[in-house]
Length: 203
Image 1 (cartoon, helix red, strand yellow):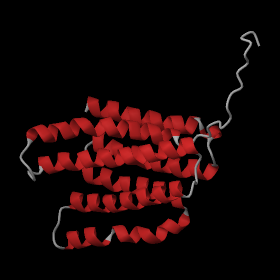
Image 2 (image 1 turned 135 degrees about the horizontal axis):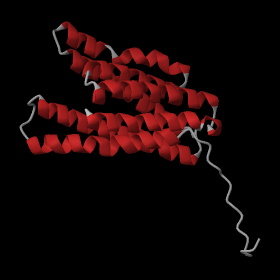
Image 3 (image 1 turned 90 degrees about the horizontal axis):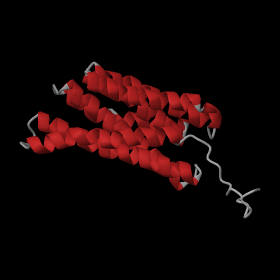
Image 4 (image 1 turned 180 degrees about the horizontal axis):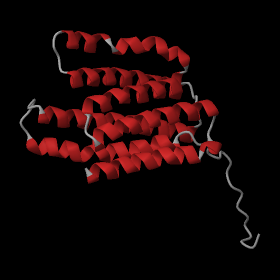
């Protein structure tokens, strides 16, 4: 529990840093969708790492990727969200596990938000420093979720390798923490000007 609270506190600090630096945002809209995404992720992490209600936590994480997708692509992205639902719904109808169904919806929404991010970066929607931070943050999320999947498959007996399972759980936060930092910085307006350095150190 204590370790979970430490993790949650880190995520909360990233969220607060975004709020405190709102005046330096690239735009109000970009700030708002990022804040909503990080807020949803903060709520999800509370259920995932503090109280350990995994199905609720994963389900709340849906909204984080919905807001991230809206940040990158705007209102038009709404029409592709239903694409994330059919397979999990079919899975539930045949008596599937609720957590796995929630995870499948999450995976579909993550694919949508990542695709929206790639499209936004391809169109040069953001300045270069922000593009680097956004790409790094979202890609680190992918790597984090790969290790989450490996860890859970190990727990469910999909493969019998305790060493790989423990390695996966130890690696999750190695990717998740820097992903949060990159996204928390990605809305800032970085100076594009090269500072003028006087050859005279006295000036």
